Image (tube, rainbow over all chains, first blue to last red; front, side, top):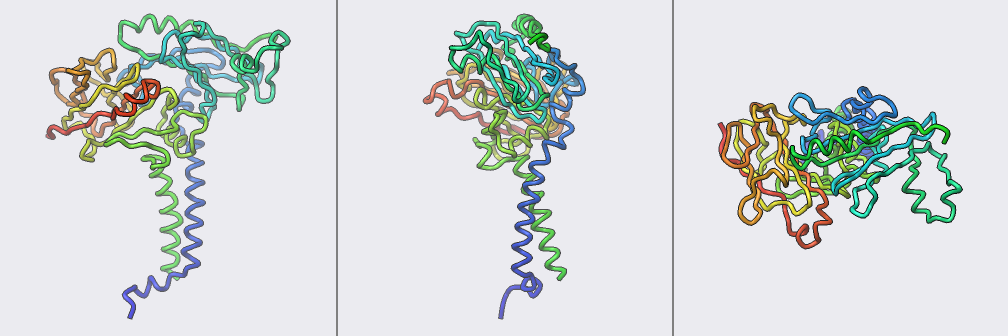
Length: 193
Length: 189
């Protein structure tokens, strides 16, 4: 009477529903656990090669010498692996042209802060990374708008992570100029503050 | 009984893991925008990125720039849906991206730059030899080609990355009309 094979008819609805629920749970767990297990992540590679609280300019991307996969030669990076557990970390850098960006990341790749270059902005910028819950408001800045405080002080979600200054390379002629700006960038634990 | 166990394993384990892998590796309509062979992760490099986007970039070892500042289009197949491979020759052809700065790079499937004597791995808005009306035409081939040529050596499977900065700021009209270039397969060996 029925065209459905006998073994299919033997599958209970209960099993099917239970499998769908279990499949959903496995799907969610697998998706969430991948970032934790990704040993090849950019951040894992950088953790192994970069000193703490020091800004380092990565070498230009070339065949056999790429610091990060899928990073082309049209971009140069300066990166600081920060740790604010011993105090706030001050980062000083310049974003001299449009296309330059400053980004702050957790060890798991969450980009929690990004600052693009803007024409009207002063060339040198200093940002202070502070530990979770330790954001303070200096007496000197009382009376100023909240926005001023939020730009100069960043409360990081985890005590360790990375800040990345990204510069587009518009041609080999610009390489020296870009390297000079990136080399000037600093990252250090702020003493007495 | 055996059928129930098999169905449970197929749906729960294979379905759960397989769908997770697919959505992390290829994305879905929820996480990516597709334009022909190109796809862009909508929330790349953003603090509000969804778990699939985060897992995609972490698994591939990438450091994405925020999609609020630049859009990165990735292609692993040509406009006919065939997997990009170094045994074939392609032409990337279309209107030049409207952003202030863009770059087109070719990688092997693991994201490595492909060694070549010319040390040529990419073109950008400053280095491309533009065609009439601001058209971009780039040959992707193992052997040298006239004009803009990106060598592929014997890399095997290929991936193309087209990063366009400030695409949204380039003007709603222009940015809205622009589409990533076509990838035409010319020949295969």
